[in-house]
Length: 212
Image (tube, rainbow, N blue to C red; front, side):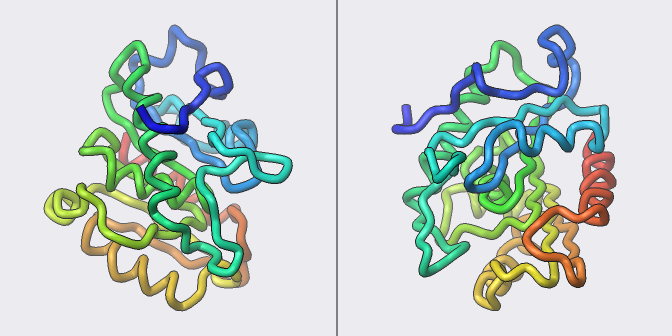
């Protein structure tokens, strides 16, 4: 067991219990300082072929919650040792479900987007695609990286062209890893800051429909 855990009682589902087992599952991961009901507001705008489960991050942060600790002097560049436990906690929650979804993906914003990609890297193939909305790649190597380079699962990475989080170093790290470890769909949205724009959401919808 990890030192962190996901509270199953706080998960916001897009479907009632008896309608969850037949459809592929998308794990939804909010950004730092937010909560499980934030991205759940996107459920009506996402393809109905999936069931969505929005999780609450296990760390308290300000008035909300966070997946991992961040260094305020190095935004978007957390110590991987703080990210791995949260990733493993999500995988433990997934493994404890009373059924096995036919397919599992992860979708997140900012910290949650970083965690979605990290789930690909640490999930041993359990998570088969990832959507990172204004998310970033965690530095360092992971045990699953070689497998991903061979299998190249689908991934979406979208960010605003005016997003102050994305320093050249952060962009370079993602550009050096994502195209060589995933089958990548990426987009930069001119003039958009650190948010999910309507255009990004339409692209995410199209990406998810291709995975259904």
